[in-house]
Image 1: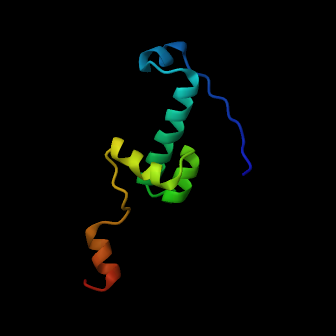
Image 2: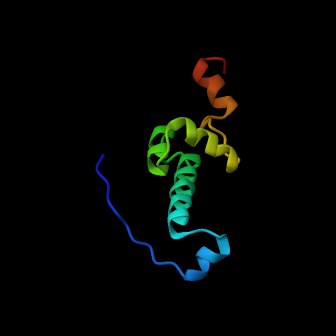
Image 3: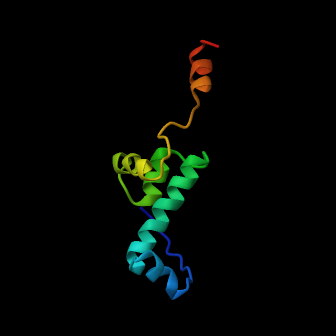
Length: 85
């Protein structure tokens, strides 16, 4: 897999406020961004898991922490797609 490194400048207080090392903070940022983009429908579960650096199963489990549904469709959309509405 090809990767690219990005640099983000943050105040030192950000790490102490969250009680995270820079490596832990970076991992949390990746997961948080992946969850948000998944919730918005910008990326699929597979792509979000890749962004987060997790397998798909662990990404789905992480959605619980953020109280995000693993389903991107509403019940109405599922019924409509199945031909019931």
